Length: 216
Image 1: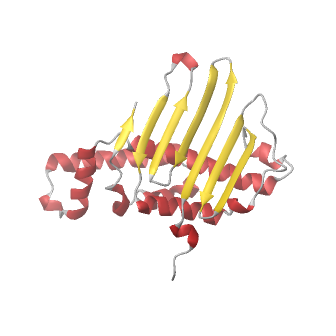
Image 2: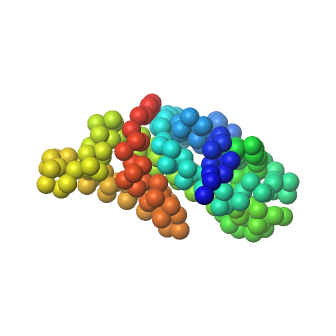
């Protein structure tokens, strides 16, 4: 089967949610860039928290899975004409580029599905709501993977290529611990409906290449 233009073309996704209030400008923002870099920023001034910034490079396999999720959601067919306008509670922005398609959405913060169902476009806003929730959790998990250093990524490469009796016991313990952490992240941060998708993203063929990271 021939690859589609969306498979081979540029892929870019940026999401922002934030507001200005008692603690200043608080926001969450992340972007999946065409070069495979995921940039993640979370700024909360509550209790004088410092801004969290992370960068991690994703494999082509991970990027392909992200494209697939966008395609199957059919978010590119929606528009925000009848969505709630940004207000003092906050604003959300979602921008996506897939091949020759470029779309952007702007709306208010959505507290729950009650807000979705009471809107003028519940069907379109529901797609946006679930997609955004998924990518928010996914970006958080992937940025947490960025806490791995390159030596840990190297151990994962050896985990894939070695038979059990060739593994160094200490490495085996660390690998087991890492996968427990990933399983915990999935349970805590990602709704069960998306677990198969995240399991695919974090599968062995893609895990080893998630290792070049930056963070502050």
